[in-house]
Each structure stands twice: as C-alpha cells, then as structure tokens.
Image 1 (tube, one colour):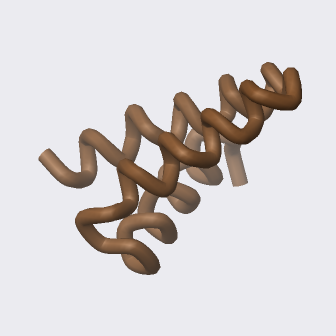
Image 2 (cartoon, one colour):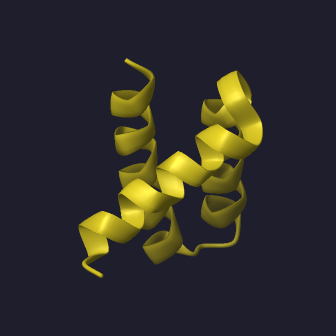
Length: 57
C-alpha cells in the first residue's frame, strides 16, 4: 500500500467514525501533536485533512 492510499484510508476511516465531526477531530489531533512538538505527525494529519476535505466536498 502506498502512503497516498494510507492517507486516503485514514481520511475515510475518520469520516466513517465521526461523520460531519471528522474535520474537528482531525484538527484536534493536529493541535495535540503540535503542542508536543511532533511536527511529523502534524504533517501527516494535515495531509489527512486535505483528503478528508476532498471526500466531504
């Protein structure tokens, strides 16, 4: 599985689990990771957020 496929899968999972609240959950995760300096995680979840936006459009 490619990284892109994994990111789409994560976005899809968030949408299934949280519905319309998925963007909020992703934003919360980004904030948590940023607060502890996990910039790699922030980058990952920002990429998930982009795909989530596309799924919800």
